[in-house]
Amino acid sequence: MPPENATTAQKTARYLLIGALALIGAWMLRHFIPALCWAVVLAIATSSLYDRWVAKFRGKRRDVWAALTFTLLVGAVLVAPLIYGGMAAGREAITVAREFAVLARRGPPALPSWLTQMPWLSRWVHDFWVEYFGSGSGGASGAVHASPAVIEWTRVVGLQVARRIFTLAFTLLALFFVYLNRDRLSMQVPRLCRRLFGSSVDRLVWRVVTAIRAAVDGIVFVAVGEGAVMCGLYALAHAPHPILSGVVTGVFATIPFAAPVVFGTIAVVLLVRGSIAAAIFVGAAGTVVLFVADHFVRPVIIGEGAKLPFLWALLGILGGVESFGLVGIFIGPALMAALVSLWRGWVEEMPAEGP
Image (cartoon, rainbow, N blue to C red; front, side):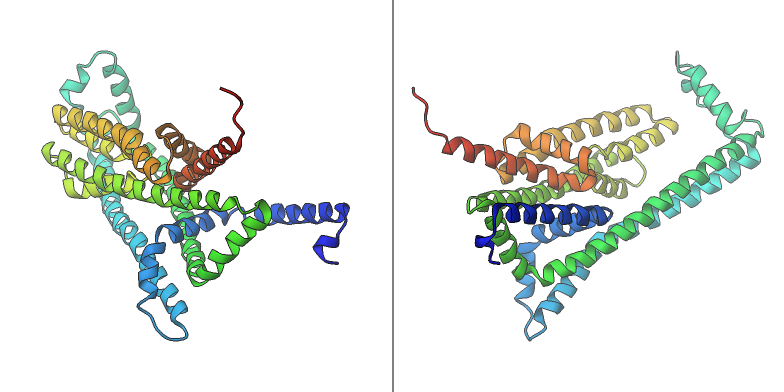
């Protein structure tokens, strides 16, 4: 029976069936949805670059080879920093293990004199030091007590790393098929949206795509700028490995409010070494740079690209990260752009109601 000849009950039942199948499918693929979202975000963000890449290929299999090589290129760009960071983390882990071995044999060094003289904190720091590292005179018990916590932390980190590797691998697989079927998807998705919501949905889809591209630009530009600025600040404070620390800070800066993990650790290292002024400088300067970048620069870049007011761009970033995790950096502004587009379209279509 043609759809136009179906009764109201049949149409209702058909839509209920479609909705039920969609919900069941989403529930079945719930563990793969983040990877699919990442694939869509990467495909939208690199669409202009992929257009130039496809133009270099000829032949009947040009789409397959272009999609395969460009996916491998994107994977190399994403994986190379992770491998480098993993190697650096491995070296640091070996250093920490050696320090634990030294603590087990000789006991930890004495606390800095300035730390033991601080009011209110000296007693708490002394108790913590004794509990986890022993009394300082051949006390190996602290290092022994600390080792189970280190083993548990290593196990948790290993599981998280394995999960992220699986997500990355499936993301690249999905990205390959998105590139391969990009022309077909670019026609079918708008056609489906028009059939479901009418022709006015075209502006909404365009707003969402523009917001995702603006979010990618804001994340990348702000992360690079924040890493460069912090690299200079680390050099001024004579922090260890300022260039490497700046690169790591830039990588962490892609995640809102994650950069303090890096410059906070560097400040603690400087503090333990006795460079109190340098530690305070790194902590204060890093806080200022983070606050300005995450609360002003990034929302402005994303808001300008997505045509969002500053407040809604900021709320989209923060709310997206809180609700969807890291991929929410891109989903949040896209949702806010869609809502603002609906609001503007609705208000523009309302008739004037007097002076």
